[in-house]
Image 1 (cartoon, one colour):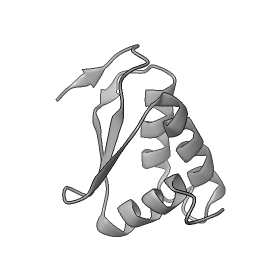
Image 2 (cartoon, helix red, strand yellow):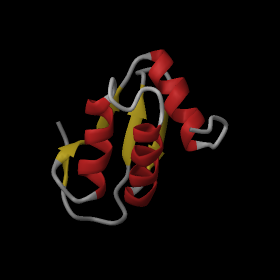
Image 3 (cartoon, helix red, strand yellow):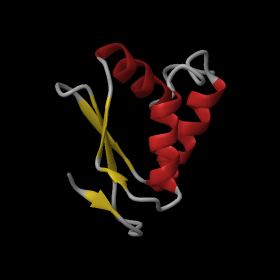
Image 4 (cartoon, rainbow, N blue to C red):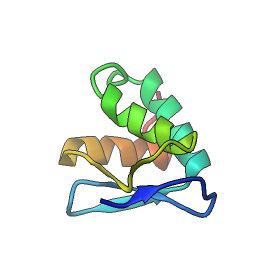
Length: 84
């Protein structure tokens, strides 16, 4: 397991183990906010927590492992194809 500490150049990987996209700290915070405002904000709280903890420099795993549906939804939020 790779742990990231304070480093603005680092990115975290959101993946379903087939597809993936990377986000930096600012993007992770934006994605976490969008997720919180969505229908899945409470159900997928562990995903939001992972993104938030990465954004505020807490040690986290370099990957956010999600299901195919979660990946498609999160990628849609990230690329603004889905709005909250």
